[in-house]
Image 1 (cartoon, rainbow, N blue to C red):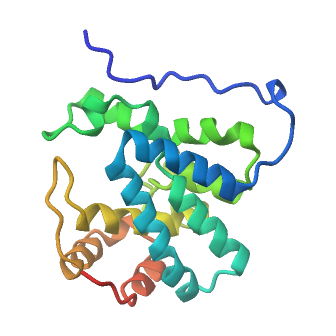
Image 2 (cartoon, rainbow, N blue to C red):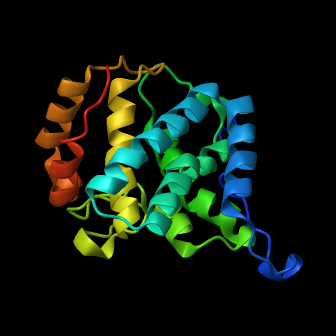
Length: 205
């Protein structure tokens, strides 16, 4: 039987490392270098999301510090996919149930990978909760509404938008207007106030 994933990774114990906080920008650049080398499409996805955080952070009234955390979290939110098989990440056909369950683990894996870096929890919360839905139907914890950290709610929207507009092995990208229409149709997944503000950004197709 093919081994699809290393999702059973065990995070190093925090006492195995010197307890120091790593500069999050240094961590981001290091992580992006690894991701770009293995999955260029995924690296491009995270870089585009970082660019879109600039306008979005301003619209939702984030402080400078929160804006920086949003950009950093958006730039590393999918780090857990490094522990998912290339076969699954690049599969052009529909995932099986077991493959989809493995993909769902990437949020928790990513958070565990970042734990030794002692990053601000607002950054690691983005990685852990960026697939939570506002109506409680998301993962990994099934959080809903304001239980989901604000920056994670913002990245949920950024992530969905970019996934819709960009072509993937299993999906042809759509135009900006169509992507926003799809997201409004599925609005139960998103913070309604943030989704409304996101629709005010002027995107270039």
